[in-house]
Length: 419
Image (tube, rainbow, N blue to C red; front, side, top):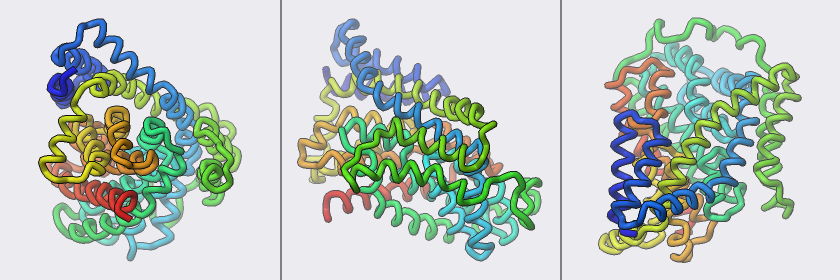
């Protein structure tokens, strides 16, 4: 089918999502429109859509399994304990690096960025008020740290990128460590630049229950809070380190079980499962819609059109990986959906350019952080609400967030291909 048809369908999906239609249904409708406009018969369109969803099935199951760890970290108080310990440990003089590091580690542990920001926001507002930081700087520090952590985490976007390229998850996570560190440094620079610009935090900004004089009660100790994600990361690292393959379907729930046991929160095991499933089921449903559109795009000539554009601009073929991730994240305003559509649609073309599966997945994953914060996605609104930010001020952060994503994608390209 024609690439114009697929592109038209993608634009229809973007318009529907911007108009606040359900993203999953928007993508399904976009897939039907794109297939028909591209010249396929209706029954062929449906078959291509189903093929796209079928390709998603293994990764969706792994993502649902990841909910055990994510739910355990939040419900046992481990996520809050990690964030609180880092911020208090580094002190008021190092608020910005503390916020960056706190959300970074939560994202690395497998917590969604928006959940990590929401978890960290109360103490971030309290500490930021003490040192008279701007609200924009506080939120940018948390978002930048989350973006850096997301490219090296067992989060859904990394799982999907690794799955679609046929690469080992732990290897894809490890491939972006240098970009993540560069992203942390660049985030600190930007947050420091705007630390006194815009609306400064006042005493009314802090959420009352977060008294900085002492740590919150009823939270586990830091060792117990960290044990679950550490076990997961060790299990995932066994394949590259020792040749022992532990599938994420096993490693992620195992970390969740360890988290519940280490924090002695057995009574919260059921609520952890319910919370994790509630978070991951929304992602799974989104990926069903994403799969239908990805099936249409994969069967079209859209990837050839993009490659022709790269040739006209004299950009090397390897840039297709981060560029496709960035474009698809702009279309969906989602790291997971952006990485998924890009990986499904362009993985063959990327590897045909001589890029390894691990490098291709890592670059697509980094590219998907460039525009995942646009206003037609939920991340934009959830993070702004976490720090009580007005829409006008939230929009002002978009160029800074885009710059952080661009640095992550550029450094990933350099680290995985040029060096």
